[in-house]
Image 1: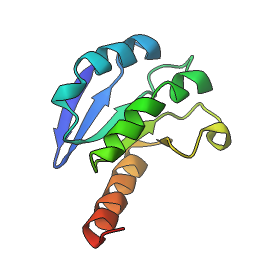
Image 2: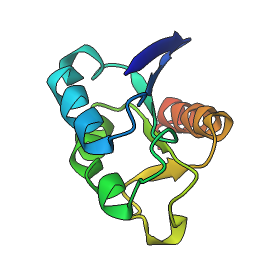
Image 3: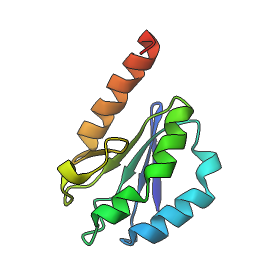
Length: 110
């Protein structure tokens, strides 16, 4: 797990490849990140499945309640099958763009 801070966003990369192990480690350390916008880079896991992505649903929901963004990055998943409650994009650049748009929406009161 590699953590990088960029402005008001924290990027956490899954460097081990196993998404379920990454999620467990992230849940253990979640209190450290719950007040920040998060980008979770899962692109290192080439065996990533839709079920792996869906496992982040509860974390996404609780993060949005805190008025923060959580965006997953993976390029080998069927985006049409991902639930609407989970934000999944193929690149880090798009993840940053999504967070910027959500920040603007929150500032405007949407």
